[in-house]
Length: 309
Length: 303
Image (tube, rainbow over all chains, first blue to last red; front, side, top):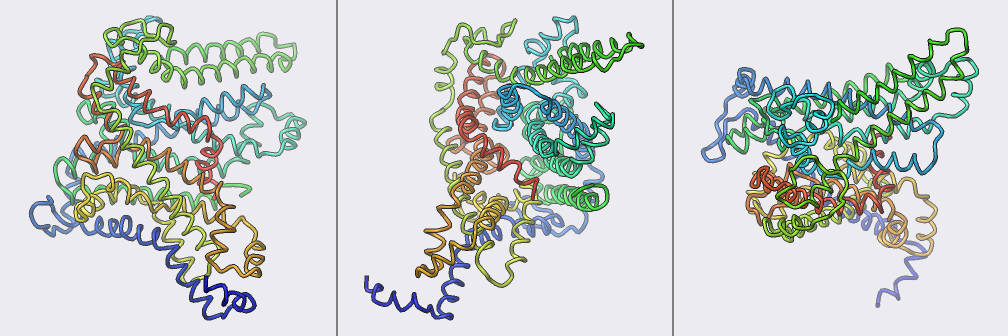
């Protein structure tokens, strides 16, 4: 309360030095939780990961420098090779499906329809995004059960014999893709919906007058206009698909054999089941480089191929 | 299921298009819109059914008695609800504790992110200091590093701090948020400067300007950060799988996956009852915060 007596003096003219002193303290306090937290829980671990990739360490005995031996071992390791191939196959198929379905649905919602129907459909496609991938995989695993699953029951209604969804290498990979896409296409859908809604109506009207309708209008007018969003949606979808873990872990645990084992699953298994922390870090580094490469590609492509940005 | 319904969907579609060339002289333009509309509604209905079907099946099956939960034909509508599975899941696992753990972890992460992102976002948007752009770029750069890459050193760090197998092990590393900081910075940049000048003229210091002028205005932005954090961490599986060891520290998704492993395919309605229970908070977010969540999720794409 004694501060009140000095208060008026400060109003008239706050001493510049004093003010900047306070502001400097404020900056420090404001940044501390985020910046120190990141230094501790992100930057330090990144550096540690970089270093660990060149060591052999089982957490019990002392770490041992092995140079590039971890990376050389990865190239020889059939499980690692298969898991990276699986991951890339998964990314290609899942991203194409995810973007294709999302763009189709978002375009279809552009047509004239009752507002409640549009809101209902948008909410429906959005809904799986608020669920946990682990829970989704739990109920999907029951649905794809070979003997009692609802999927094979529906197939039997049209005379298709039971598919061994979770025990055949190809079918189990397909299930992981389907479950992943089921949950995630809504995200790309939202991005496309936003972009399509922002296209001025006049452009479509002009295209109609020029006789460009249907597919022609879509490929020549709509697609170029939303190409920035298509690029961003693709990159976000690729980066998140590269990190797929929850679905294969719960649905198939990587099996049968290694047919659904992904890169992140091998990181998890190397580190926390085989206690090979150096190997896990090396795989993590390769994954990071892949993600950085996709991001770099985005920057290059957005300069060259995207119109109207 | 998918392929069966997909086929009927494409049948309708191709059926309508094959009709068009059947009248080569007439103008097909007049017929096309109707056929196109039917095809479009068929495709939308199919997609909606495929999206909602699994959730409805999960709900209906959780409301069957455990012994007949895997009987065929399956049920998609809960006509004769039976709540045995819901009682049983509380006996099989400590649902109360799982919910408490999940709520504590998620709630504290959300609050921590809202507070730290608001502070840092304000500093980056409205305060001047040396190296501001460089530090902000570093913060943003952390978004490119996937959590799976840092998890091994984070695990060791947590051990070194004596926090292994505690809920704090899940909470602390998740509080600093690059995306939340980015969102709050954008939010503060969008607020006019006049308020700060007016408040300064009235004698408010930098802290008062922040606390009494800008924080109240930034509540909608903080809501986005909070709801995004809630949605992500309530559903999170990878970090709890690694950072918690004993079942007393499990969160809901981890507890449910463990339950599924223990029960096998014996009484699936018990597991599904747990799944439905774990969805309830997400459903609340979906009903009351859908718009906020949509804004937050898509904000990253338009930076």
